[in-house]
Length: 227
Image 1 (tube, rainbow, N blue to C red):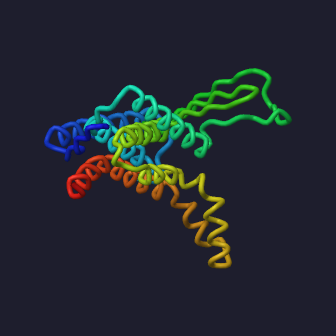
Image 2: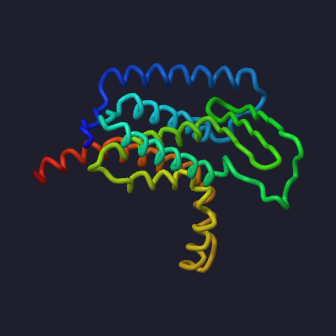
Image 3: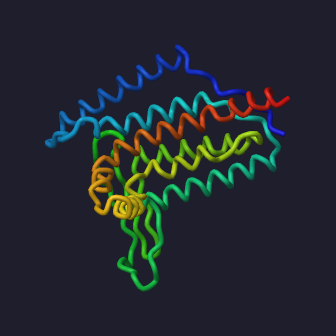
């Protein structure tokens, strides 16, 4: 059985680390726009990737990993790996091409520069494609790692991990369209959600990280009350 230590509450070290990270990110952002001709049309969309990166970094370096047997760890790795692949597929970052839709005969690698955190790399072959978006790929890795920690905690569940699926609001857009059309008779609500998908996905990502981060601790507290 795993021995769970409650996840720590952030302290002064984390405040200092966060301050340094924010300073570096703002400097990189200033340098990027100093050498690039474009200007951000919406500043919050330029800053949102830093929210994903900073929140994820703080969670990973502070979460307490339960002790567990080798078999339990392998199971946790498998679950977290499948969860990560599922998030990537749902976000459209990985996928397969059907045999009757082969459009490329050779592999291509495309790099799309962007402001810090928004860089994109696309690898396309005749059978599959893989895309790397800095902030989103890192965020999905963080969620998967926290799911790994949660699986190690036998008293915890995976309900919070399911929230990570909705950190890609754009992927759930067809479902949102159907719901809004059925409930409200139009796509006005769905269109509003689609327009704010970066805002919503960032908020849901932070919520998912928070729930997964503190869930092992809650599991141990619940076990104490039950005993």
